[in-house]
Length: 366
Image 1: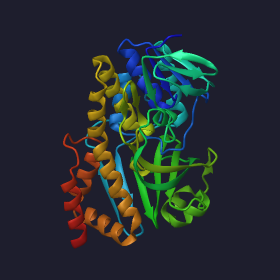
Image 2: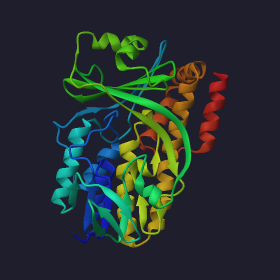
Image 3: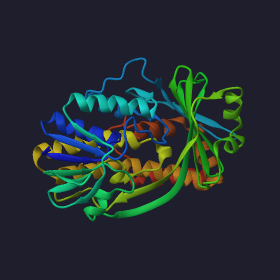
């Protein structure tokens, strides 16, 4: 086996990168120590840019796959505000189902999938996979927050903004709204997203790793009331989440995608959308023989997601500030609608630093 491109990491970011590269005519191999379908604790919501990117990859989600939602609602103890997504299709979909669709598409594109295989060493043109060397022209790191490819390329982390913890459980209950709901409490959020006509996904994000779902529900009486009598359809799963950005996502013939290059806090719901768009950008740069193009495109793509995530984390840090923000959004719904438009990339112009400053001043005077 002599692939042009070796992708380390067979999660959604790695598979999407492999598919996009194969569509450009490259021979691609993916290696991962796990076996599909690979699960990961996440909110399981696909924003419009994610579903559009999947379509471009040839992953065609059918009407029975997952469950659509049309916008977002932010809720706390005293108020709520909602806005519709201006354009595109947002979808709640089980992570395992998404992963299997990507595996199937990668196989149909001729990608070599090396499941249950371990990478133990690299040099400039080959990697040791289960004891034997596999040559490559380009190496793609799609191996998550603790990327071994990032360490090999000496790309390090530019910053680690904040560490938190996420937990997830599914419940057998019909979605009660056409919106994805984000409920706020003391330094925590509970996200409710539909995944099927008779199922919802509850994700809980918190600073304290000792807090679990059942205990957390007491802080969210509105959600608890909706779940009364509903049976869990999955076991509770959890993981650490953090905001981190590599110093660069390109060095020589090495490139990073997904969480290996940049991780934004999970409450933003941007992880998969960013990863799939990066896959297309990277494939285009590889086809042009210019990885520097990917670096600049990656920086532009992630900038707004990082700023929105930071705004949400600022809201998380102070109950008084959060209440002011939500009160401002309730009084001026167009501001919240604009934020949702930016967040879902329905607005062509990125969120500028001055926009954050202006919003901060509005909050202080609210």
